[in-house]
Image (cartoon, rainbow, N blue to C red; front, side, top):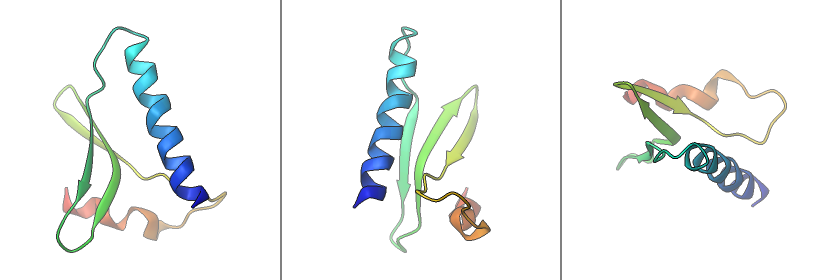
Length: 70
């Protein structure tokens, strides 16, 4: 549960940082029928930046294996 709280907090802070600069946050979430998910996609200047949010001091490479769907 604490991981979900952290994820919500991170996303809200990113949204606030855009709003405080008078801009709309170009963020999205990805999840497909095979349960592959990306916590946050930031679309800026025609580029998608995937973000995986983990509550870990040392996340492994498996944390980003769903990025391949992009």
